[in-house]
Image (cartoon, rainbow, N blue to C red):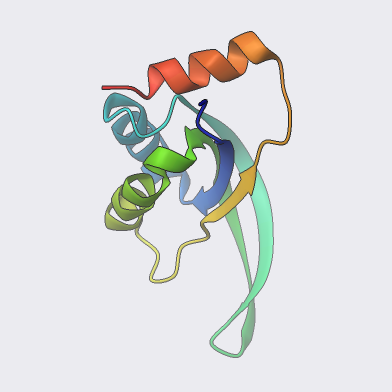
Length: 106
């Protein structure tokens, strides 16, 4: 049975993004990570409204790899409470989804 594919979103400082992406892909915890630079974030933190320019990581992985991917992402991430939001992929081009699954196999 094919694994369920996931897209995981996380934002981080620009300087940290390539290292995080490479670690996840090299560790086969993600098939691909897109880095979307210069995302403007507005959020509340410790009672204050903050703004930041960040890089958005769009991480493609599977449910089988999610727990380890999250652990690795948390270990590499500089934020005290990083954004890590997983969304199931409800459908997609079958060859791409197969590639995603195959690429994350050891």
